[in-house]
Amino acid sequence: MIQNKFNLNLIKALKYICAVILLQTLYFKFTAHPDSVLIFTKMGMEPYGRIGLGIMELAASLLLLLPPTTVYGSLLTLGLMSGAIASHLFVLGIEINDDGGKLFLLALITWSCSAVISYIYRNQLIQVIKSKLL
Picture 1 (cartoon, rainbow, N blue to C red):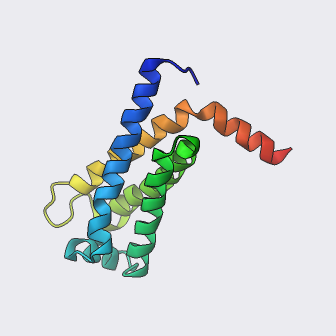
Picture 2: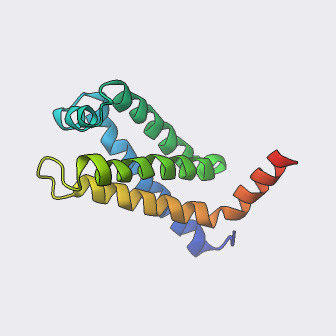
């Protein structure tokens, strides 16, 4: 990873975008907002999936924001958002409750930001994988 000012600012911006999106959805998940309950009911995951995924999104946010664990947060976020995108494409539809596709768009933005973070940290990921295999 190239340690220059632009790269560091880019990583910081991407981390904050991901974390803010993930954290703002927690209110809806943890308060059993009717829209959140509807989504997880359609997926057959209410209430345990809603609460469990909320906890995982909270963990991903914290991992993203802490510099030593950013790469792990980005990977967890990639996995969570891949599931969210697949849920929209195959179960829920792009638009939910006349939201104009806002939730789907937020999932795409979060996935994209975490993918860029993971790419930037690819060398660190390769080193971790190699150290675990040897």
